[in-house]
Length: 158
Image 1 (cartoon, rainbow, N blue to C red):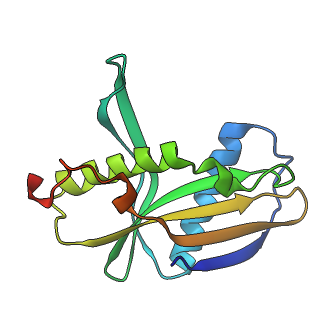
Image 2 (image 1 turned 90 degrees about the horizontal axis):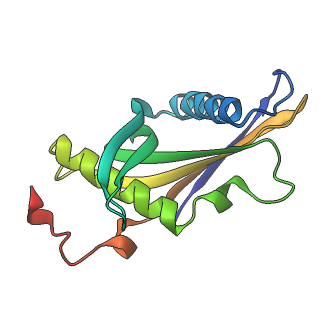
């Protein structure tokens, strides 16, 4: 079962319209939020090739933030919106995105030989409001790797 932490942060920024600016601002807020709540940041924007698509083109995966909460390695996806009028930021973390992050986290754990470490997949949803408080929510254990596990994904691959 996932747990949720939330925080309202006063927004003193200029009008928000540029999507790359919104994304970067969201990741910065998320990193500060995690540190404020006792997480230790390990890495941001981890990007690595994770395979090929059906056309044979190389596919890369990215994890926004990797952090430790006590002895649990957290792979954190950050979704930021300037408004939640049409949909929640969480709606963008669909099965395709979850699968991509799962594959990327698997490569990360393999690269660093993290076979025995506990891990989970978290999502931070951020809604920025011009001249108001921004809402930051952490959804712990948003999904598990189990639903994406293939028969060939045995723990003996290390």
